[in-house]
Structure formats: structure tokens, C-alpha cells
Image (cartoon, rainbow, N blue to C red):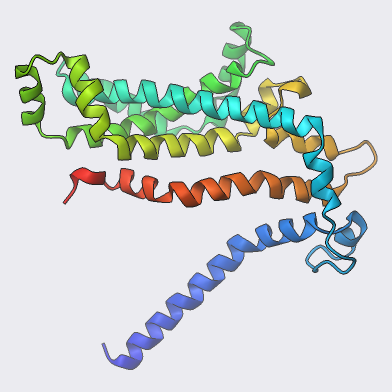
Length: 278
């Protein structure tokens, strides 16, 4: 390939990357700009910059609202519950499927892996019936438990691959030193698998923080709404204050973006094998 062809190929790649970035960042920019304008200004020119000064009062109104902090608490409870339960159950299941031989292990693991093919919206009616039968309607646990269940297949697949990459000689040596299987799992396997566990925890934090549909279905009382549902407080019978909605979405995005910037390396490291590779 000549130098001109290489330059043309690189230029095409850069143009495509710029277009993709514009498509992704366009709605984000419109949301941020909408949050610092008045409602009338946003409705008149949705894609324009502020012409009446930056309206910090939109963010002040949100951050001084008791419903915002109540919704934040609910989001933290859902996110924390989903993450802790998923990591605990997935790590134990991955240990069983990777280090313990039993009849039908491969078949059971393949059945579990089929859960990756079915998003939660596909089974939303059975989930609602089951949650109702357990008496968890309008209860945060009615959101946490289904999210944990549907997140387990992906988490187990990630952790199982990491656990299987740990040499069997290390496990044999631990048994010789007097460790039980649980001791090996707790004191050796889990510390070595921290990159994969961090990746799984990060993905579950994102799932719990961004959940909307299941919370909308299960949680009827506004006191139990997470941040993703709290946006409905700005919708009135005769209209919607879109400037406040955009400011609210901006506030909702900021923690997720900051968290992802710090957790990105854990996701990449965990999904590519972590410290045991190379």
C-alpha cells in the first residue's frame, strides 16, 4: 500500500470516528445546553446556546428538592443491592463451574449461559407475576432481585473464564498446606480475580443505576422511585418544564460519567484476563 493510500485510509477512519462521536455526543450536548436555559428558550431553539444567561437556578431547584435526595437514596440502595448480591452469587457459581467436577457441569453451565440471550423485557410479565406473588410490589427488593437474576449469566461467564485461567498447581498446593475448598476460594482465588470481580461489579453498578423499565413497573409509590423515575415530577397535567428535565438528566449523567472514567480500566483489565495474562 502506497503512502497516499495509507493517508486516505487513515483520513476515512478519522472522519468516521468524528461522525460517530457527533452522533453520540450530540444528544448529550443538547441535554446540557437545555439544562442551563429557560423553558421558553429551549422550546423555541432546542439546539441553540443560552442567550439569556446561564440558568443555574434550574440545578439549584433540583438539588434543593427533597424528592431528589430521596430518589438518590433509592438509586443507591438499588445499585448497591444489585452489585453486592450479583458479585457474591456470581463468584460462587463461577467457582463451582470452574474448579469443581460434577456430573452435568457443562450442561448446567450452558443452560445458565442461555440467559445471555434473553433481555429482561422479554420476561417482564412472568417477572411481574412472580414479584407480586412474593409481595414485593412497590418494594425496592422487587427491582433488585430480578436485576440480579438476569445479570448472573454474564457475570458467571466472565468470572468462570478468569477462574479457569488460574493454574491448578496453585490449588493443589493450597490443599497440601491445609486449605479447604472454601479457604482456597476466599483467600487465594478471589484476591487473584480482583480485576474480573471489579469488571463485573462495574457493569452491575451501571445496570442498577440506569434501570428504568423494571422500576417503572414495580414501584408505584413515588417515595420509592429511583433517580431514573424522579424525572416524572417535572411532568404536569398541562405541560412539562423541559429545562428542568434537561437539568435533571444532566445531574443524573454526571455521576455515571465520572464513575465510568475511573472504572474503565477495571472493565478492560477484567474482560481481557487481568494480571494473569502475559
